[in-house]
Picture 1 (cartoon, one colour):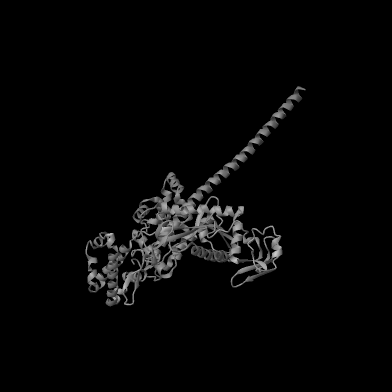
Picture 2: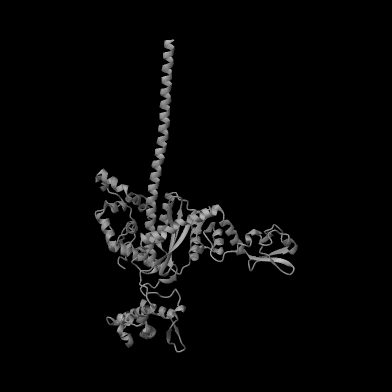
Length: 581
């Protein structure tokens, strides 16, 4: 990597004695400070934690100092805000005073960032994430998001969550195209490292036009035989690479070839490879050699790529994303919910927060086990609806039983009668309630009761999970719950904005690691937009408040003047009457 030996040096932003802003006409300075630049300069740039990124650089004191990290990160956020290419971004930094003002570089004779600086910084982030699993950009963006939420006075105890599918930029391949691409990649690698190892029947891959002849000029009737031929070539390449030794097997192309064989083929007793039936291939299997991390999922249509999850804090006017994640698209919403609960509980422990949090989701995030885990960590998981089979409306729900959950004791049935027998199965986590037939015979709820008659007594069994689910269904019918659940609609606009404005389906990179980094800057851009809107609302509200106060005081002042004038007028009239008399 270029610039590997660089020493970390924070940017202390020491201003010169003569500030370029002071040389600017007042009306131009007002224009400069009126737009987005002042908000970025004052609310984002100073709070970028450069020291978090010191691990990306050398500790050797003789190394070259790095380019200022806060300027690089600030630029990459502005890149997403303005939807610029790297070239356009660098041009804006060098020729546009607004970018220099926002990043506090107007006083510098030469701007300290080039296109290579941006590329190298992203490479450092990707390498560190791949090696350690620590996403420094995610940490930074979430910290900035929390600060913005605090600045806008958003209660961070109220959150909502949603996910969105993100397409990889790789091409969707047919099975024949996939086999060919894997083989072609291996042949090219062998041609560089061990050309003598290329099997005779695979040398055609090096010829121009071989791909079109093999794939696109194949008739439908010939597809199966063509596929078998390609798989035979895959086997030949695998055996040839093994025979060639370490120089042919210690590379990315061979790793992809090996993975492909494991996922797409079955072998007979003689060790020969044969294609698996399509229905037996896992969604986690390789979709395209150019993006080995992308997976397949059928949700709102076929998708090859990733799935993102966002959690935002909100109030009636503002919303800010305080947590996000990106994973292969086979990652379920319940896994995201579990991850989010862990993150929020760790934050609460670190910040010593004891107030209960509300996390509003849709039904796919919810499970009884997750709700119990969340409750332990002082988080109330609030689904807008529940998945699964709906209960029979003609039968009473199990929440009508009075249960002492702490002691696992059923105290009464829906009709208010005390059970003749009641016990709890610890292993099965199930309640059993037995009532005498005489009690049930005179009960007005007998027709709707879930009790089932047996030889001696009437019996009902229900699990602890079912009881809690019915309690939740009853709670979902309350006005307070519906109000909370309906507020989740606000987060459902985020996927649309990310697609239309920030083009998450068109990120010019491939691979999970790099996608995480690019997606993080898009989240930062969204949060900065929220900050701008919040600031405008706050300024407007302050102006309205000032107007109302001024109007009230002016009205009181006017009334006092009128009253004073009336008193003077009455005094004059009385004096005139006295004088006449």
